[in-house]
Image (tube, rainbow, N blue to C red):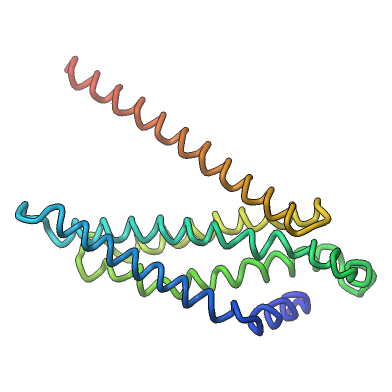
Length: 209
């Protein structure tokens, strides 16, 4: 194993947040699934809502909730990976070690991503609760998990770039968050615009037909 990955993982797991963050993360997801189940069953009381509909609602709510939570946590781990070395004045010693620049970057990237993936893995049993209601299969869970991993890897790379470009962790973290917010807002706007265009085109074609 890359010694940088081993060092970073040992350091992260010895910290208090190594057990505190997973506990808080699962607590929040548990509250979200309880609230979503309450809304899905209460708002449709007496309307004959099926269990599969509840399952789909719970699955989508949990998938987007865990993505939002993990996007808030990724910059915390990635944006300070290199700046902490600058602030502690250990970057020069790291660059003169036997590790190449590629090994250092890969070690920082993997170590910042692995802890977030640990949170993602711990949430899989909660995400799979939708199986009990139907409407969701293993393929949907796999697709949502794979998409989340790809998004987290991209955001982690952005945070690591900001960590290399700035001298202080607070600046790198702020720019990383701003980038994540900008990307999320832009993609959301594009999605809703295309959805409106699709719905208007479909309605127009149905009217003419």
